[in-house]
Amino acid sequence: MRQSEAIAPPPSPYMMTQTMRWFGPKDPVALSDIRQAGCEGVVSALHHLPNGAVWTREEIETRKSEIEAAGLNWSVVESLPVSEAIKNQAPGFEALIETYKQSLVNLAQCGITTVTYNFMPLLDWTRTDLDFALPDGARALKFEADAVAAYDLFMLKRPDAEASYSAQMIARARRRFAEMDEAARLRLERNIIAGLPGSEESFTSADFLSAIQTFSGIGSAKLKDNLVYFLENICPVADEAGIKLVIHPDDPPYPMFGLPRVVSTEQDLAELFERVPNASNGLCFCAGSFSIAPENNLTQMIERFAERIHFTHLRNTQREDNGDFYESSHLSGSIDMYEVVKAIHQVGQKFKRRIPMRPDHGHQMLDDLKKRTNPGYSAIGRLRGLAELRGLELGISRAFA
Image (cartoon, rainbow, N blue to C red; front, side, top):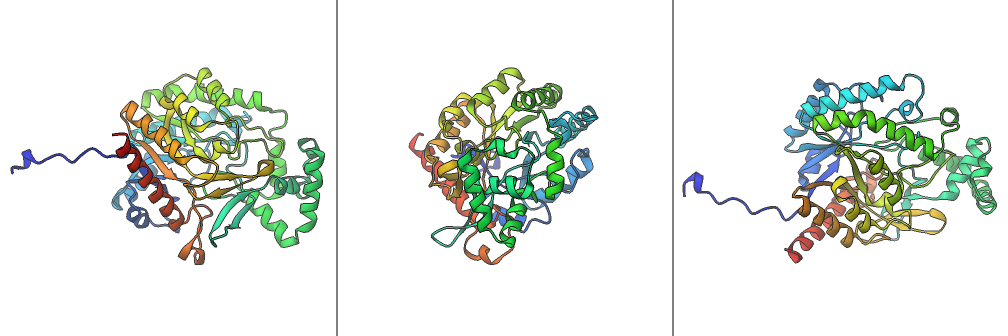
């Protein structure tokens, strides 16, 4: 058979491009590990650059070449940080927006056209326990609202914090604080504000309290206006460059420390896309984050915002009382992952495009229990999640072919 007559390979059964997050050369999980897991690419960022700095083409190309040398591609930026001064429109924020535009242009010129960001004030994703013991001996991430209240009321001592909580929650938080020894209190402080992997800021309690004051008087309506202002300025540049901006939802999806959250529900998204209809204004559909708000119907949201979804995080959560949750295995928990994966698979078919996906977080398990790992980003737990999700989508693809 002549080369020109070679039979083309069958189309991929997967409408989700399989990736993992990689934090750069200092990540305990190597690019070779990610490739062996079966990933096609990685989701990454220039974490070594300070917030507000221009991502130059030289820096981008250096990182891109490193990834490609390992046989992978850099498919999605996660994240290009939005400076706090943009979120609260502090003096000088306009210059930071111009810097952001330049970074977008540079990324597009380097061939990277999906860019994740979030608009959560000060804190990125937040957990109170990074070593929650599961019955099988693995370790998971957990969030407890009473622990946040205990830190806020009795450690941070935020002025007027009592107004944020019910009398019952204040009583529970007081008991929780009294039961913790000094080591437990320091661990809680570190978990909440010292900076988790991929988070944009790290604080001491004194710094955090001062930073909260910079958002004084900014409620949810004002923060939404600031987000719209930011997008109205950068979306025309992204449209021209062919960039898809994908906003990550709030994690968890409710206010903390008196700071508003504005990307938590289906209604938040509907309002955002109505106010900024640009094609570049898209969504990172994080199933785990949206799942914590019981009013969110995940499959309904995927169907409604299908055209806007250009990246997805798949993780499962087990909701508990009072807004608490822990991160369950990918196929068990409060989310019907079969329905979610089927809906995303159908979005890919409808629009004839593959959507980058990463198995978000993962349990610390097996040999990784003996290693230093980034919380939520150990190799084996994510490998398990990826294998489960890959098999689930393959089954869906065959069943609905």
